[in-house]
Amino acid sequence: MPSDPLLPGAFKGRGTALRIAHRFERAEREGFDDGWGTLEQDAREEHLPPATTIIEERVKSLLAANDSPDIPFELSINPYRGCEHGCIYCYARPTHSYLNLSPGLDFETRIVAKVNAAERLEEELARPRYRPSPINIGSATDAYQPVERKLGLTRQVLEVLTRCAHPFTIISKSSGVERDLDLIAPAAQAGRAWVSISITTLDGVLCRIMEPRAASPLRRLETVRRLSAAGVPVGVNIAPIIPFLNEPEIERLVEAAADAGAGSIHYTVLRLPWEVNPLFHQWLEQHFPERAGRVMARVREMRGGQDYKADFGSRMKGTGLWAELIRQRIDKAVTRCGLTRQVKALDAGVFRPPQKDGQGVLF
Image (cartoon, rainbow, N blue to C red; front, side):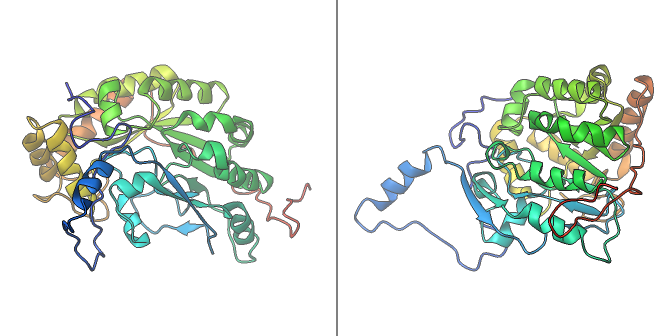
């Protein structure tokens, strides 16, 4: 069983309490007692639950191009940078380094909102040279994290895509996606949308430690049911698979996904790029000290003896015996449950570029 989430040095509702330095830091900081009780004050403040700060940003571009053979889409949109869900394993944490912010606690508490996302999207879709291709929403940070309830940036993006009859996919671990079923369901029924819900574990205690502000596993399965009932093709993404933590649940996760109405299963194994590596090590030693050595030994077996290798073709699934065993277990469970590892291609043939007034044409 996982340890108590409220260990010393942990914050309730946060994946990490560390404001780890990022890889571009040029200065090192060290506490200094100036005689005015500064160190004691800093120590008290460090134990206060950190609030979330929203940083509004007006971006120059929104669409991000992808040329990786490991990812099944060419274009993506992330309305937010940073994610309040606080998943300790998140491979997007190092992107906060480019903002001169920590991939640790800052990634969870200092969220950048691209407030002009819909405006930029319309401009980019209207360019004469633009050629439609399914756009993935939420590939790096969850487009339905808590701040979306207030700002609605993801919904604004979906409204643009709907007006233009543009195909899109969504990946999320939030039940918030249900709010936009009025937009997603018609697009899905026209062959222009599908949704993937990430479910990493069925263990509620492990989920609270590993993904502290994400929806509970049972709530995510309910989201799968509601999407499926609305006619939306929905897959379940078992990601990441971590040896000796959620790896024993592979078969039960596939079965639960099938029972909830999912049509496809996708998975990745744990990735530890850049600053994610020390953050995950600290988290593992804090919550699972008795298993930490075994977990990392198996991770290295799948990464050619290293904690992480970013090679195309293997970074998502790993290599070696353990990676092959995971693949076989996934495939057998998928076959047994009557699911698939594939998704149907989306229709981009009826795309209508936005008009100058922001409205799509009707005919």
